[in-house]
Image 1 (spheres, rainbow, N blue to C red):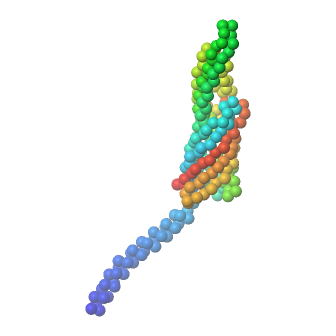
Image 2 (cartoon, rainbow, N blue to C red; image 1 turned 120 degrees about the vertical axis):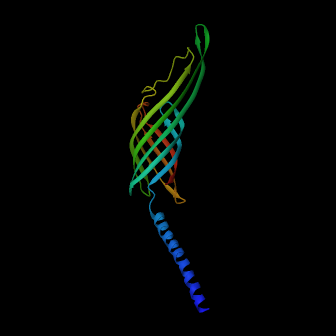
Image 3 (cartoon, one colour; image 1 turned 90 degrees about the vertical axis):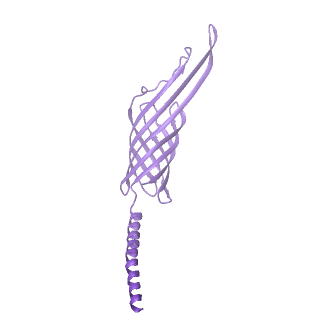
Length: 203
């Protein structure tokens, strides 16, 4: 009987020791993995932009962010602004009243490459931005006034962007960052003012 108890105890120790060791090893590396900062973030941006002559229009975009030091990040992305409008009216001519109409649609894309200074109080981003605008006009022959842009459509140009924001971290991996900024483009005589919010996920 004594020999059987010793054998059972040895067998239990033989089974339990690897299990305990595996549990401690998993807990150790799991804790270190949680403590290790996540340097990459992917996100979705939504907001409003005011461009000269186009009023206020919605914006959508995607963001990639990579941390390379405590207060320094690289921020890349693409943003899309859409503008649609329609004008109708009448004009008096020698032959009487003439109906006029104009439809126009524009898609404006920006691709920022920004250095981002981060802190618990405020984040500041600045850098160049690549701009592209596509669009079309639809008019009848009597409409004489058409929108003139400073840059021809479908032409890439380089501008600049500056923005400030505040990051709110929640649920370990999510970041919500409201922001406001201004950018320049050869398509417009005046700067473009932007405001929005980005929801990011830490990889």
